[in-house]
Length: 287
Image (tube, rainbow, N blue to C red; front, side):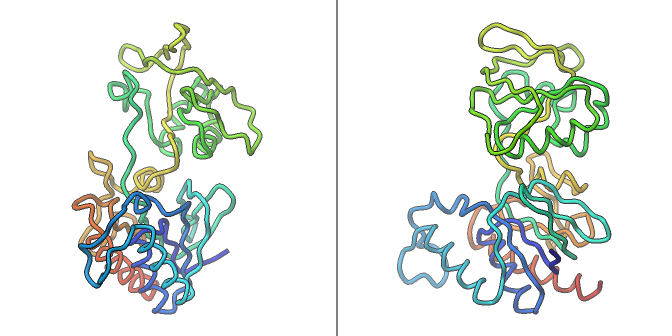
């Protein structure tokens, strides 16, 4: 399936971008798992044009309906990877889509799980991107930390080169909707240990597993996860770096909203979505 623009995220930034790309007659697809952070907002009364207080969910529904009326297509799915082969390839759990331009609008990045040693060994055996770092673990024994579909995707990615892959769920129940040949370890993790690099996983039951590397894939792929996989620059806080046009360092890849940092406000997200949408329009016309 081919589109002019694929937007990952259906929050205010993503919807705002789609309103501009759709009105420019660009075939636009929004990929999103659900409503996101707005679902937790009970009252919104500091946004222009709202005569009456709305919940975040109500405002989101208005935006989605507005986009649909303009012909924007929606796919409820989880994006796990962005690649480039003449066109962008956006890979989800269930499908692959092509696009001339991609806008990342998936909100803020998650924090690393609170496990002793995880921060200490970042870049020294602990990675957040199988696509980026799998090569360095060729023939090694590695683990993927996570229990959802994203963790399975990362395990498959690194499993192409690693000697063995163990999925660490850290006490969670793993997904059961697709088969896997990977070893699954459900025990709670106490800490990671090693010398110059990670060497051991210590579990709460006092057992120890030798390991050469750990790939963190908790929950779903975040904005920074997706950006890293295609080479976009990320700052130390996990925000995607963009210029005034919401362009990343990757041609025709844009980002907007909470994932770029700054004030986490709907007004800011809508503005950046507008800029990203207009930049994508200009970019595609140049193509």
